[in-house]
Length: 430
Image 1: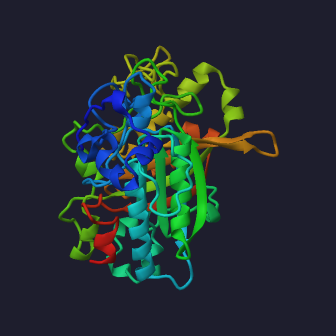
Image 2: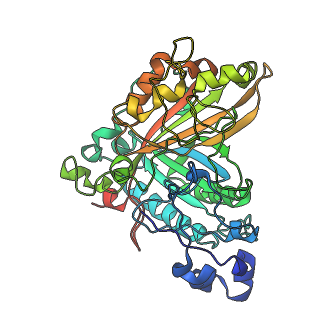
Image 3: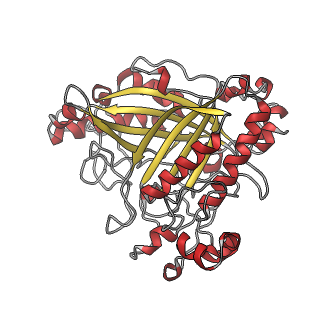
C-alpha cells in the first residue's frame, strides 16, 4: 500500500504563483517540493472506523489545496484515496470507426493531462484557467474500460471473465442511456473548481475519438468539517462505510486488487495490480425515509443513527451480535436489516471497498428530491465481491423500500502507470 507522508502546509504554492515566477516549464520540479513532496494518502490507514472519509490535513485551509496525490503508483489514484469533497463520474463511447489506435492515443492524452493536473500544473493544451489559483487539492483521476471497449478495439481475447455483465436484479430500474460505456473516468478533488477543471480538460482531450455517454456529479463532506476523523454520512443521515476493509488486514490486497501473476490466462495479465469498479446510481426516496421514526430507521439499517454502533451495543467498530435476542424473543438486529444482510460474515467473507459520492440533481416534477448515492465499490473479482452481496440484498433487504437502482456499470481499472507510461498501455500495446 502507498505510504502516507505529511505536508508542509506553510509552503503551499498556487498555480498562479508558480506560473508567474518560474514559468510552466519549471512547475513540475518545484511544486510542493517535486516528486519527493508528493502527498499520497491511504483511505484505509489504521485509525478510527471510516478513515476513508477522514480529513486530509491539518486545520489550516492552505493544507487542503496543497495536498497532492501521485499519478505514478502501483495502483491508480482514487481507489484507496480518502473520500473527496467533489466528484465527477462519467463514461465515454468511442466514435464509429475509432479502434485500438485511436483508443491508445486518447489514453496517452488523458494520462498526460491527469498527471499534470494532479501535480498542480496547467493542462498541456489550451488550459482554461479555471483552477489557476488553487493547488492540486488532492485531485485524482481514475480510468477504466467497460465490456464493450474490447469489441471496439479488437481485444476481446484480452477481456477478463471478471468483466462479464452483471446479472439482473429484481430491484433494478436501470436507464441504459446512463449505464455502461466503453471508457469510464472518475474525478475527485477537495475543491469544486479543481474537479471541474479536470472534467473540462479531459472532455476536450477526447476530441474526435470519443463522446460522453453519461456524466454524474457528486459530493462528500469537506475535509476538516468535523472535529476529528470519522466515517462519512450519506443523505439518509446514516454513517456509511463502517465495514470497509482496512489496509492492516492481511488479505486486503487480495480482496481489492487483482494479483500481479494471475489467476487466469496470460492474455489477462495486464490487469495485474488493477481492480474492478462497480458503479451504481442509487436514488434515495428521502421523503418516504424521513416519514419513518428514528427507531424505525434504525431497525431498517441495524445500527444506531447517531454513532453507527450496531443495535446490539458498543461503538461503531463493535462486532454485531447477530444471534442476540431481545426481551420479545426476536433478534435485536432484524433478519432483514441492511447491516445484517450485507455483513461479510453473512456472505462468505465477500468484501468490497466502498468509495461513494452523494448526489443531488434537483427536484423532480412530483416535488421529490432527485438525490441519493453514486455507489462505487472496488474489488479484485466482482463475482466474489459485489454480486453475492447484492443478490442477498435483492432478496430481502429492508432498505430496498427506500432506494431505487437507476443506472449501473462495471469497469476493469488497470494498475497505476509506471513513470513514462500511460494508463492501459500494457493492454493496448501488449
